[in-house]
Image (tube, rainbow, N blue to C red; front, side, top):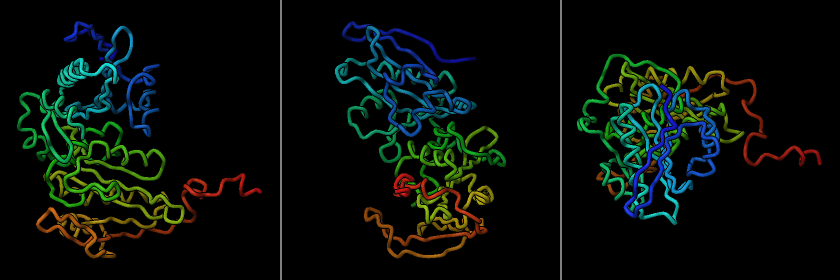
Length: 357
C-alpha cells in the first residue's frame, strides 16, 4: 500500500495546535523548508530517485502553516526491521514547546507500525540526548543510541543468528540502516572496522554507509553485501579508488560481518575482487590492525598477503594493549590499458581554458 501523505494534529502544552505531516520522496517544495544535512545525497533522495530500495519517512511539524520542525527515518523498503533516525530539527524560535517530542513519538509509532524492531541514531548534544532517552533510546557505541521496540529486548542475541548460507548482492541506498545495525555491535572485536572511512572499534557507523555507497554511483568504488534468508544484511565488503589521478589504479578494501557469517567473508571478498576487474583497478590494498588476527585470516583466504608493516602506527593508550602495527595487505590484478578517469576528473587538474592559453 502506498504510504505517505498522512496528516494528524496534536495540542502542545501551550495550547497551540501542531500539524504533523508524514511525507515520502519526492517532496515537492518541502526540501527548502526542512532540514536534511547530507548534501551529497540530498538531491536524488528528495527527488524520489532512491525510493526503489529505501523507505524514507519525513515527519514535518507545522504551526499555522509554517514549518517549525522535522525529522526522518530511513529503513529498507523490503524489510523494515531496522532504521536510522536523523535530521532532527526544530526552528530556533519555536524550541522548548515540545515539538520535537511530539514528532519523535509519532516517528517511533510509525516505525513500529511497519514492523520496526531497532532504530539507531547518534548525538553529541546533551539536550537531544535527554529527548531521545525519555522516548526509550539508550546509549550504544560511541555517541550512538538505539531504540528497541517492546518485545525486542533480546535483539542482540537473536537478530544476527545464522540462518543458512547468505546470498551476495550489490549494496543499495536502502542498506543504510541494516549496515548501521551490522556495525553497531561489539563483535567481531576488530580494532579496525573500516579503515578507508577511519572507523575504529567504538565509533558508531550511522553516517558512514553513505560514504561507502556514494563512490559506487560515480564508478569510483563497489560495495557488496551478504543477505541471509530473512533479508538481513549480515556482511559487507567494499572498495574505493584512491582519490588521485596517479593512484587511481589502487583501490582500498575493507569488510565486516557478524560472527555467525564470518565464514562467508572470504567468499564475499573474492566476489569484490572479481567485481573490480575491468574497472581500472590494478592493486587492492587493505589496512589491518596487528591484533586483528581473524580479519587477517579472512583476507588471506581471499588471496591477499601482507606487503608492508607500519610500526607502532595505531595508538590507543586507553586500552591495555593500546599500541599496534598497521599491516598493509594487498592483491595485484591485471594491468589496465588506460586510466579509468581523466586527469580533469580530479582536484588540482589544470582547467581546459588554462591549457589553451
